Length: 149
Image (cartoon, one colour):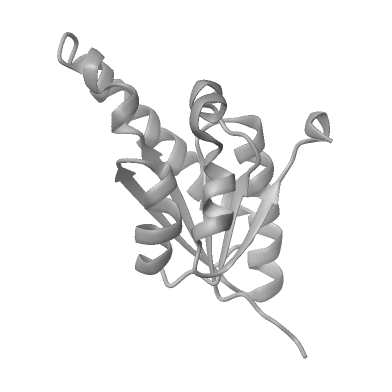
């Protein structure tokens, strides 16, 4: 029985783990001739209080997200992925990735880094990747960097 992934969703946040996840997603997408959807979630909870004092925080987060997604989109296309889609969402990555975005792109595989950027949240309420594994409607690949092993 051959299993092929047709719609791959990869979460990117600028971390080393997300970079590794993105690289693996490229290879899987090329092997399967899959559509690759690149997702960045701006976690509005993390800067909501600060934003009331400084609106520039939200603007910087949006610019960072657009630049990051464009960089990854260009890299995926140059690497030979034929179908690349980018998504920018706002809210909690724990909800957006496995529920909203996965359904929006009809994902049959979600790929994400093991840890990502938000160490405080991971310590207090568990990792985003852990939550994705528990609530995703499809297969999930959690990617670790060599330092994580």
